[in-house]
Length: 635
Image 1 (cartoon, rainbow, N blue to C red):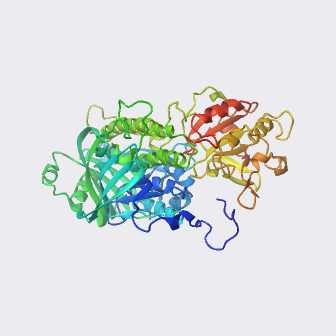
Image 2: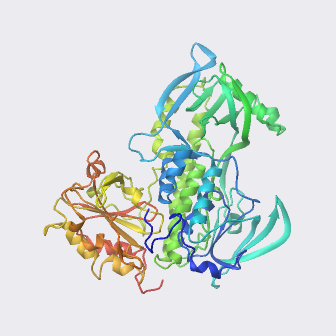
Image 3: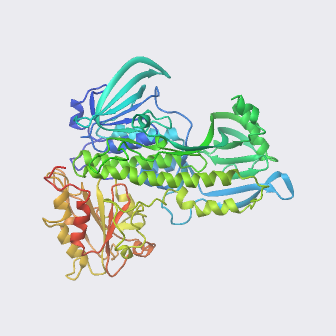
């Protein structure tokens, strides 16, 4: 992370200076806002953290709880989510505190004694080079704490407003702030009788599966329950089960358990299948207790035992897969001029089982997809039409998740003595679906934000529509080994990664040199789409990867566009250019054409938008014109 751009100041450099607009905003609940976010769960807080990067945008986050979540709920953090947290500067903390999932074991009935279980398989949790980030386990409450603290350190000094329940959402398209949110004040679960109203430009409902926002815009969750009930226990326990510190999938004649070791070296989470016959009485009477769940766990684990010493959190839930057909308030029959004003994200628009570990992860991905679009539309650099792509892109992802979860849950709960009792079947499925559970299988369809793959052969490892698959590089200016993807922050900027051709970057025959010359010209996309007075990399951040080693090129060989001057002192940014890591050449790892080079254009949420030849100057401009606003022109 770079700092001191505006002058050296003592103290914590990761705490931003308060934005001047804060002095004009009320200390309490305002009457108007640019964005109102309803719900401070994973989706709501990730969205608020993204919008906090834009202090000129007035964002209000409300939640019906009396205070922050302290324990329980989701805990699996997919590789892709850790990549997202890296963009906020939070990945190191998450990895340091959490439990890293390295391997998974599989247990089935012992062929010699069907009443007992035996290990039948052991696999790596994440395949090699799937992501530079690991699969982590961290309590959801801690994840939310990281995001709240990030907001407090931002120039907005943002904090959630607690004890507020969204009772109604109304849209008046003719108003300057067209969305009116009526908020009921609550203490505990009880309304106090007091209400407030905020008028906003946009509203996002991240208010869970019983979302009032969803109901207000006429959407509904469609789908079915599976008649499967599971208990969840976070416990400190003494056990002779040998894989208690490994993620373990257990399927015995008595039911199933998913063992998830937790952070701290001792805590463990157990997802425990409750049988509709054996456990019918406590399910019917709603008399489930932690002690009864522990008894079911011991029944399934036989011949091993689990002696629970302390329960940190527990819950019971029914598996179901439900989905909305749209994630915004645009009617299905609306014409092309109708733009969304109200959105839903996370559990408000899709619900599924917890066993695949996707709920929190997909919800946060929803929020980041929407967050940068809202932010750039509100600051006037993106066309409002890009907001339509949120529902188009994320509804498709959610449908894929529902389909996956339905099959995953069925295989997990399949009885080991049934006709499909192949001990290796679930293990094979687990490995085959590893890209999906890691969160890196998402691929967005062509749109104003995602091009057709006309030049994909130039960089086959950076697939258009998928997230940028990072790789090791060495930063030229200071010889720092790092990952290319870690150079990007959650700042709403597009990235143009210019992979150079073989020629020396200063040579007359270099396509790279010709492109960087164009990018410095008056008709370049940087000049066209960067507002007057803004930093030169605030809308389009140009970075380069050379083919030469970092000792074979110097900063003096670089063109001015890769040494932009920034801030009030016109300081030079030296961190735009990289060279291959000798041990893992990014050109080979990601299939970049060495002769021709390539431009890999990446959206602010790290998804590859286009791959272009180095000499496709006008094609680059025309593609960006579909989503960006030309400087000096309003939308």
